[in-house]
Length: 430
Image 1: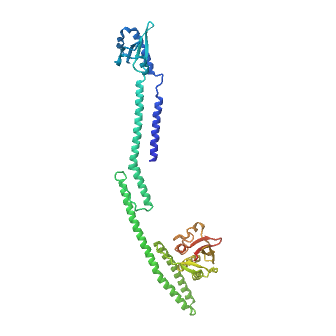
Image 2: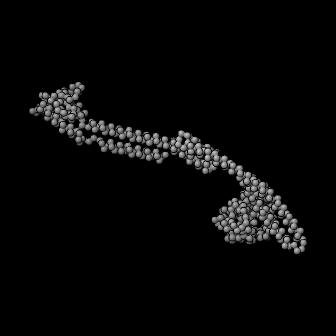
Image 3: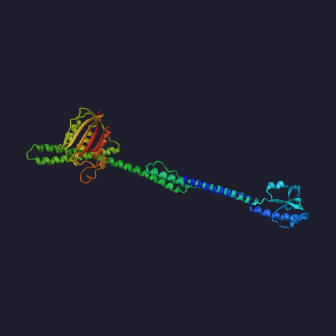
């Protein structure tokens, strides 16, 4: 509507500029054709008056098309085609009013004066003024009509449409608690009501969807928790059978198979733990219990998850770290498991103190991660394109590890090396 207002103002300015130009171009000049015609007619009347001075009433018998008056030398009216008040009309008055006049002589003697009782431009001037006034009134009326039309469009179309647009934007942002003001007097009244009904339906659907998602997550969390018990039983049974068979000769093949059962159960245990942790995070019930621990606990965790003996670790500094030991097991276990799956090389672990953190670097010598995917591997359920179909995994390992480090006021930083891939854990000191 701002553009419409500017257009109306511009059109109004151009119109009145045209009126001003008309005023300038129609200013009466000195050489007025009407006045010249009056002068010629005046000469004709003067000749007649000279010839008929003793009988000026004869002037009334000729139709000159103008009103005339004849005065004597002192201004007394001798003849007039129209009644004049006072019976006198001086030359000075004729000059002031612009009346054409001429003196009448006979034998060199001044007899009087003949005057035409109009200035030759009166009608044109009146017409000009009327036209100018009419154009001004017409222009003002048109501008007022355009303004009223703009107000009508603003109230009935533009403002309701803008409200619908703003409402649609709020709905798109998920703000479903603000109702749409409805006015049945504008042409969008029915649409406004329909849009508000749509908002209420969307709000109801969002609430229902959120409730269903919460129930699904609670179900997943419950199932994940329930799966932990049979998995633990499988692991314990495998350990017991392995221990018994190891004492008997010729049972090495069975011991190896039972060991494979244990490893698969361990993999399932890790996946279930990750799924359980991710679900608790979504539900907002993921809690940690951080305590001060000796840093040497990291060595014990590495030993627990280094099934293939690929880890080569430096000595841990003698410091206290503030961690949840159970969750740190999960973090390091996920990192070692990923290295086994995607690299299968030696794993080097090094430590150093950086300000208020113990920096733990875990590096392998595998193919690494493409640079364009490096910023996404910590995402939930994200798996690299290269390994999406060829390897096992859920895409939760590094996501859970990163989330756990943040909850322990630390950080997990992935990076590529010249050869291999490195995960850096920033573990807070006590």
